[in-house]
Amino acid sequence: MNRFSGKAVVVTGAASGFGEAIARRFAAEGASVCLSDIDVERLERIAAELGRGDGTVECVPADVSQEDDVRKLIETAHTTFGALDVLVNNAGYSHRSQLMWQISVADFDAVFAVNVRGVFLGCKHAIPYMIDQGGGAIINIASIGAVAPRPGVTPYNATKGAAGRAPRHRSCRDLPRLRRGRHDHGDEPRRRRWAQHLRPGMK
Ligand SMILES: NC(=O)c1ccc[n+]([C@@H]2O[C@H](COP(=O)([O-])OP(=O)(O)OC[C@H]3O[C@@H](n4cnc5c(N)ncnc54)[C@H](O)[C@@H]3O)[C@@H](O)[C@H]2O)c1
Image 1 (cartoon, rainbow, N blue to C red):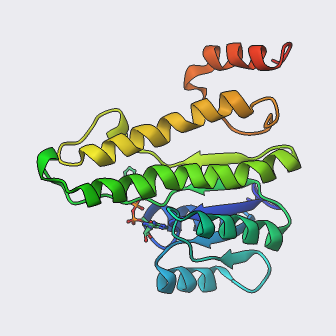
Image 2: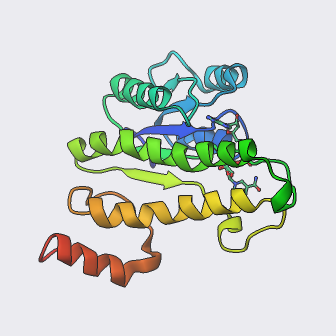
């Protein structure tokens, strides 16, 4: 099936694990895919396997915690494919499992920089393109740790709580202009009330 034929997709953290599988699946479903990661060697190998150079696969090394990197990633994907339909904020990092009082401030900052600032930067730079083209979808990969926290990774759990909450707020505020966007429907009645508030008469 080519369910995503003609769609332009960006996947962060695409050099391994979930991100690699997500990128491969979108490509198999007909999408044009821009893969991104900090692991440049693996990233380029996977992009080459998927057919980089045929106009439907691009790869852009980027650290999602760095605004210049994320801006360049989104701009390159949009320039290459002429659109931006889906952003998958998948890149993630976890510090070593430790008791809360043994976790260093550097580890705390690092996990928030990737898992929370990275999601924010992805949304910040993708949404204007999606508004311009009339819609789009942003998928933030959170974790069961957000709702059933695992011991030893308290800051990581907190970052995933933030990543999971962010789309609800974003969908409320951007809904009037991002009508084709996918939303987290967990809070559907409240989302509808907000939508009515922001744009009277909206269903
Ligand atoms: N594996 C699990 O059990 C699990 C469960 C729930 C959620 N998750 C989440 O799923 C996502 C993917 O996890 P995974 O298990 O595939 O991990 P993984 O380690 O296999 O992949 C993560 C990728 O992100 C990249 N990355 C790390 N820091 C980055 C940065 N600053 N900028 C860009 N790329 C960066 C890594 O190089 C790696 O390729 C993460 O957000 C993770 O928190 C994983």
